[in-house]
Image (tube, rainbow, N blue to C red; front, side, top):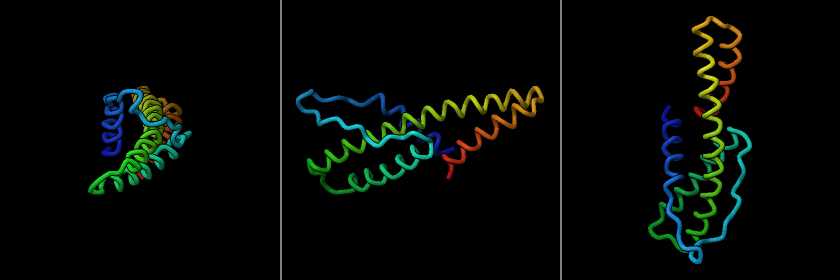
Amino acid sequence: MKKLLFTAMCLGLLGSTASADDHERADHFEGESAETLEQAVTNFTETNRRLAELLAQEELSNSDLGTIHELTYTLENALAKIDEELETMAVDLEEVHLGSETLDHERVSSHGAAYLEAAQTLTE
């Protein structure tokens, strides 16, 4: 649950970033893609570790800032995929809830399995 809350907080922060003038902005990069939830969580974890290492330094060089800039693209891609998957998980969980109310065993089983598979990826 802590991971889900942290992810939600991070997603909220994406919308609040300020931009510099065009002549001051660094080049844009694609970042590492995240085609699956597992890949997104891996990229999120590894890239945050690299970001934390850089931010732990007493001073950041311009090169460090360039690296951080590149890392943010991978983090944005990871968070976008995690957000997409969280929406799917919410739908599956609601189907489990509704299926349990109506005693629909198949609905509970199929959506429950999909929900738990995704949830396990987030909690490992």
